Image 1 (cartoon, rainbow, N blue to C red):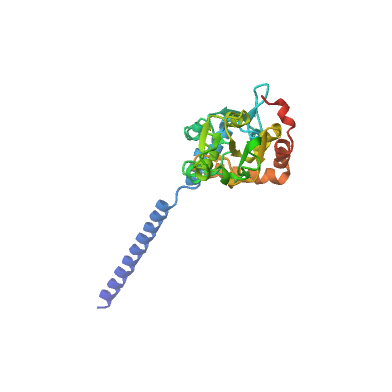
Image 2 (cartoon, rainbow, N blue to C red):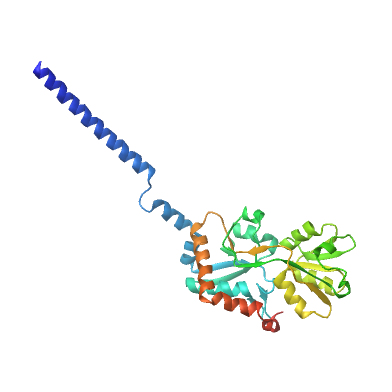
Length: 289
């Protein structure tokens, strides 16, 4: 009987040991399945990051449309210059890479980004829900809004965008930009004429072929400063529009770098210097086409 009890005891101990060993093995296997190899997941994301590719290729490719004063425009020598360009130059220099500017028509600029024609859009792009479904935006680097300038003879008759919401008025603006959408939303009763460039639309008012031009505050302020004798500027923005850099989705490393970079140049004074150069004066107009 004693031998039997001892045998049962040893059998129970052996079974318990096997169970413990099995559970330990299962836990080990489960842990191995749940956790990737050290650095595996983060390494894979980094390898696919646009930032990593920029550093490997030693080129920062920036998509923009040269024609939006003072963000990006062409000088008399044919170079693309402007506020966005100066920021892009700073960024490329701090990265230790070459800057490549890719001039792209506005209506195709997001598709061009998505098909890897360049790495980032730095072109005064307004954040909108519709665009944000296609691309990721970094923190806003400047906030603007839509403003209006009108023909001189309409002074006193048109005091705000509300007065232009009338079929008797012809409103000019650029095709496919937020000014286009704002005009249709707030002045939908007017006859809205769309143009390929902001310069074309602005000139329509200057030449008396349109009553008003709707566009972003910076551009309108500069155009008005050049033509004060023929225009009236309604300089109070009627929309809120944050502008930001756009990148492809699924790239947290690049977004992280860009947000921190913006904070850095705003903190060290370089952003303000570029802002003062392009928004504080119009000295640069003498070198523009």
